[in-house]
Length: 302
Image (cartoon, rainbow, N blue to C red; front, side):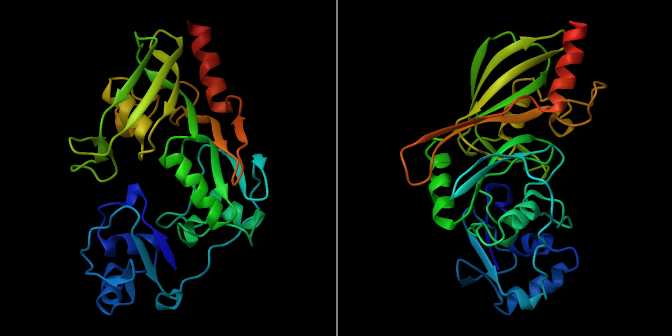
């Protein structure tokens, strides 16, 4: 099995990363396998304490842990675009993009394995088959999935070079005075809380554009465009200017009493170049049910 290290796993110890992939394998078992050279990083033997870097490839044989293959599940997919090389799927809020920790079922990858079992990229590893970029569990909206590795690389390059345009809707806490703005603050994993990302000197360049769509008494409805794709980027950036995403308790919003217990954030628009052509594809979706309920309530009180 191969696993491509993404930004949200960067700086984790090798043994911690591998043990978190499975719910029935101890850290000591993983450490023994690393010591015996059965788990490698970029084809080289490493220590258990090795700090992973983005784009590292962690590789080991299925049989050292008697790993069961990931299950394909007949979960309905809301497919907004499809061609011979890729799909754009509307992921519902509450669904994990790919398995993590003990959760190995009910994810978007499980659904994709059922829909196109023979044709999904595996650059990111078995548990991230087809996944070009991810959305947080409670963020709904558009995701690109690749049916082969060449397409995966083609689409990832567009994200890297910022030629793919990703736009979001969010309701944030407080009233934003500016009609539009740019947040350019570096992001890295929090040194105090590994579950959080923070604004950190020396972190990765992170750029978010926002535009106010509607103001309410205690909240603001905004559109955002990602110019970079850091983990939790929108959530961290909006919190950093005093306007965390509604219900985002990890980044200081607190929990509102307004019709939903999930963060009010959705990826509504994707613009990209169709693989191996010059055709520009734009996919947009309407507000999800969560956003509709929240906006209806806020407008009724405005």
